[in-house]
Image (cartoon, rainbow, N blue to C red; front, top):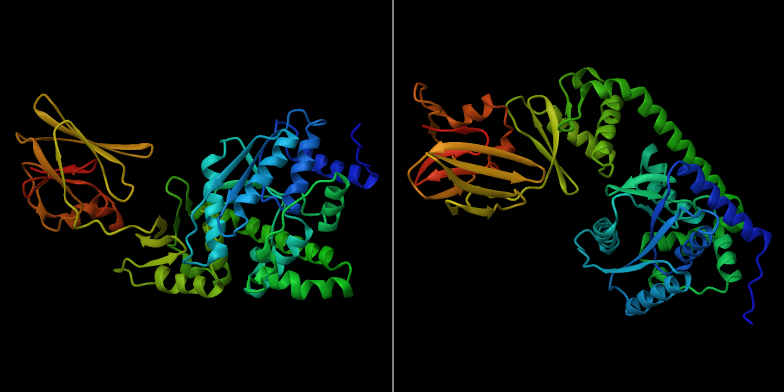
Length: 444
């Protein structure tokens, strides 16, 4: 007969705490969780907790995903270990191998690759559940302090938030690592140890291995105190957001997520920064430093009226047009590209611009441009069957038989098309004659 593990009141208490957090958060729904499983102590404890809680929360659905970064010689063994754990606990398991972009450092590259992989395999109604605990919260707070972060950064992690457009749930933030270790050992479960955790080259490891141990020995309540401070910062930031909410909704445009800066000169610098932070949060961008915010205000918002300034922020660009701020991706320059197209052909446009097809209906030619969930259409006359698509033109055009020739720049301005979009709209040429800017105008 298999010996049953001895379950203590402490372990029942831990299960009860997590069950209550799940019930409080998802009391009217059937939660579907995708567990980020590294195989380490923390995620192993959460895997075991969730697997057991299915007995008292029968509507709880659970899958686990292990991200194989390939950084350690033990990476394959960790993946097999996670697969074995999930088989023991009857939890569906996925393993995703990723390639890491190291240009911003291994830690940031691994984080981005991890969340990108999770986003690809996550079901639309699944919530990503992670095993961040009380000691992780302390490290996150101190790293934010080291960076000189404001209230938002010092709020550290919250039980619920969104990261890289993914819903995140962290039910263990009030639980200590020793509690998790005791729980896992009670159930005779094993976990993997990442050898990189001993490398103090990484800031988080340096804090964990060199700084926090003596602090906790001196002040046993240190983690709880840091957590209270993080919560105070979060509540203060929430209060600021509430006080700014009315004016923010007046200047924020939901349809294109742009921000009016027409009256920014009447606001104090702290108010300007607060509104910009709210706007960047809407776009789920990491908060820039105070220096970067000031640079954005001075170099973009208050640049001369005849300028089209821009400011790169991570993988996005903040742009100004007609007293509004916009956020776009970092576009590639496609102005010199020429792409041949003929009737009844559909082609893939460069730089994620979607597809364009050309067809003939009686006497007219129809160009249909489809990108994501949007489409634009133009109809024009031509007896030709071969055309080219370009993305730049700087001459004069005639929009109808009775109008005079106009500089194309004036046409774009009259259509309120921002400068950065003008070189991303497919232009159909018959020889060297511009026939159409698909979805915007045709020429005569």
